[in-house]
Image (cartoon, rainbow, N blue to C red):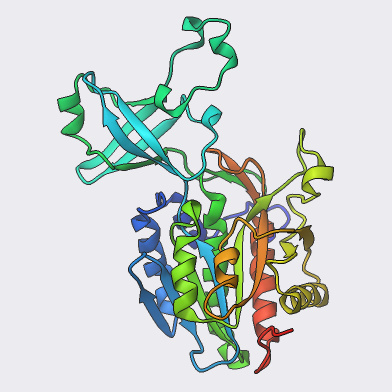
Length: 360
């Protein structure tokens, strides 16, 4: 993926399609359609389940069983109430920073059709000096869809409809891009693209590799909980985004040092199996794949926390893609890190021998 000299970098179509798909947690329909198109043809087996996960299997008779998980859901909003003047009040899907919400273009994904809107709050000119110091609470913001009344609004949308920020993917310099949902479309792409490429080298593969695009991670790793039970892997690796701390106002004494362009971040701690950690570092060094190490002293906020505790226990690990401005409408990622993450997972999968189950 690295850009050739004097050429313009073109991002992969599969990744672009995932980034453009609107898939607020619990409403992952558009991302599912992208996966059905791009991932299903490469798999030996392909399954859907009641939580909406997409489970693709390669080399089904292989040993060990390796599960690669990246979640397809993203942050969103949900229509909660419409007042008499047609202003739409909302609840949140996933963890939002309230200071980021107002003044954003959004699209409500209604069965009646897309509804465009803008998140609003009282203008600064109309606030008291005390009010200006406060962050508005969710019930003090709304979505303006240009309706004149409650009845008019409800002709276009319904209570419970989801919404996302109306912002797409864009390259801002070289291989550095911005999107509203790199968390975790980038990780979802990585695990699925890894399987697609491994399919071309299946004769070298001893392991059974199962790539799972999970749902509802943003509200409690729910899709990973059920899919890891179904897959029953020996080894499970969650690929998510991690905090790039190479920006102002981020103290490395508190948050470590992880940089954009520094390569995949390999977690180390109780949520990470030592065999898997050591093998990941070993294959990264052997294949000259840039990588970083991050301490994870407790269960991570990723699908790995669910995978590790499935059934009798799984040799789990976390690989993170460095990202700036997490859970904002304009997250930033270097796509070279995304590519290096794929290279790392491919090298890891191909390195496994029969019976290597991560028992220690």
